[in-house]
Image 1 (cartoon, one colour):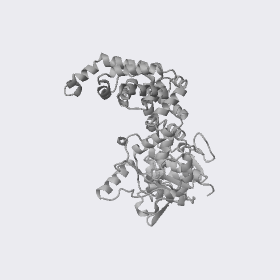
Image 2: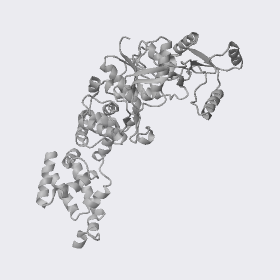
Image 3: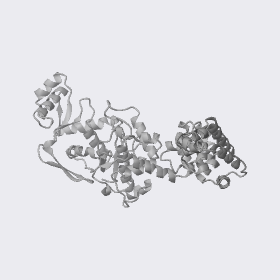
Image 4: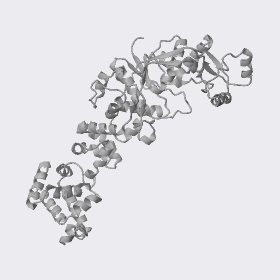
Length: 507
């Protein structure tokens, strides 16, 4: 069949779900690994469920993830058009061929008649399959139905006996009894094709050699194989990738958290981390212990034989952990570029203002990236570098600001650093260590309240890195503000007067 060709064919009825992104990635990796072509096709024939900007949003998500397609919308190609809504002539042409050859027939059944059939089957505890009542209509029947103004659908005539065997590259041989597959619609009464028919015509005409798609489509495959054979079209190879289940092994739903690529992007996840994570949902690289893989490594190592046939378990905590690993490994210069949109959203300045501070921001990235799991977290964690705290962590106030003599100690801290001429991490630490020795106290007795004074928080990066980034004037100003806060609220007195404490007994 010439070159290897695969496709991803989403319906624009929503945004790019994590499961769809995983299927697209497997197609992409398979094509790139084998030197083939990756096609993007938009299956937009379900006009009632189509969302106007869905296809555009999906393509934006693909671009953001770094998954480029060789043929499709915005790219073009010899097998176009790549929107099913623009391919109606092909479906009509091949539906007529199937009618003429007797592989298909016109069905004039009304929705009410079909529902009555299904109700009767359910009442008799039979599978609600189409009875085939329009299989052998006489010319008189057709004339009567058309005089009544009935519209017709076109149904494919399935074999009454035998077995259709799917040779699946992941599941192996899967057999379906033909008698259990009722005559199915290939063209609806509104003139639009059904999924099974349009899919076959498009895959055939686009030269698709391998159909890699979700497990849920396995039951559609025997129907599609019947159409291929009726048209004497070359059969592609099929591979159905496992389902993705929630941690409790139920079907994924909104209650399990973010699921679209767009949602993860807005929360500050990196495309590299998402690709890495979804690649491992059902696929195991040769080195099973290796959890962090670049896209190039995935391309080099991807093989369908290493895709599992059992469901994969969705674990957003694992994705978040991976995202944190990627943030930690990213160069500060690049991390600044990724961080800026989230800093803008957090009200830390305009893009232009932040770009003007990029050298300063790189220093912030270096001290914050070890703890942040997402870019959104990174922006929130950086707020105190831009704005002096207007309030302090409540537990921190009770633990650190209420100790006797703390205001005097913080004042001494401000005096110690005010004498520094060459402001940097080392000089800040040297000044503080000297004061700690002079006071005969533990390092934490001064370091913890100083951190609270400078950031309003009790945890964060190294104190002296924070001082270095804030600068001399801002550090001193914040220490003095904390002293004012302590004295204004009488925190040291309140501590000494608190019943049941050693300080209260001493008082």
